[in-house]
Length: 391
Ligand SMILES: *[C@@H]1O[C@H](CO)[C@@H](O)[C@H](O)[C@H]1NC(C)=O
Ligand SMILES: *[C@@H]1O[C@H](CO)[C@@H](O)[C@H](O)[C@H]1NC(C)=O
Image (cartoon, rainbow, N blue to C red):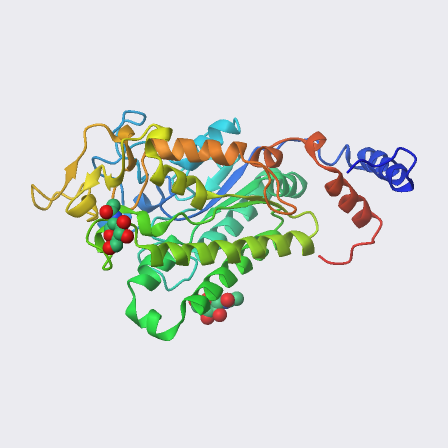
């Protein structure tokens, strides 16, 4: 809809933008240069190498990392790099080290993600760094950054940093679908409410510590993982376990609603809405359009669809098979995608348009203030004048 040039609202807009531009020019000059990562195996870059856990939640053995990018296994659940490695590349910052990596430098951020972790502390308890602990570790790091850089500079770093959260799959798989006790106690709706309620609380905790720019990944069609296809009791022909994908969809709807609300009530809160479910769904149904030959079987594993999670376990000689060229496979192992998918998803995320009310693109979060939109500027201006009382 075109606004006539003489309209009062148009004039007001110019006044506001001009004012705002003037007043924010000094405070928002430095571009984002830090990325803090929370979550599970999708984004774990080696955290679990440093904890006691079980083989399921570790990837520090062959053939993980075999594709030649690294010199061997790194703890990433892929044949090579994972999503956040590509995001760091796209944002032009160095790869983000695990917080638990001895003597690592965290001036560009830290990766707290731990394979197997869920949003609920009960999920895989004792075998992972749970989400709550990941946030406590962030608070610890925040304190040491304050000591290292001084109060003001640390505050700037924290508020300009991007917070990428990728978690929830383990709550719905280990924590619910394969946990009869939980299923007896909670309906799907109640369980999703509890999981997303805790996620929302964690986002609020980070916001209260000074975080402003969030990207919370939605969940993929979980029922199409090779392990779930193999376990699908409804069919024996390998179709996706739709009931499980539907739980992921319910989670995603609740997450979107949460982010929209948070963006409304928290001053300066910015978020990227991801669409992992759809991005994966397209690749599952039309693999050849994305350069894949197989979207059903895992490259590495055992049994139907190589859906048994035994990749790299050598207790028995024939414990697993591994494909020749993992670039042809959507799934690297029974539950994790291959490096090529990580790369494509990172690009989808990087280039995605802002599809929900108030959402941003990933590039917006990493860029300077000239890319802020009128809405940001107005909110900023109002808050300076004390019009906005919600904090
Ligand atoms: C968070 O999860 C716990 C179970 O771990 C549950 O008792 C609590 O109600 C949840 N909190 C919210 C805000 O949903
Ligand atoms: C598998 O079986 C289900 C029903 O049992 C059917 O709807 C579906 O089309 C079948 N898929 C394939 C690939 O044959």
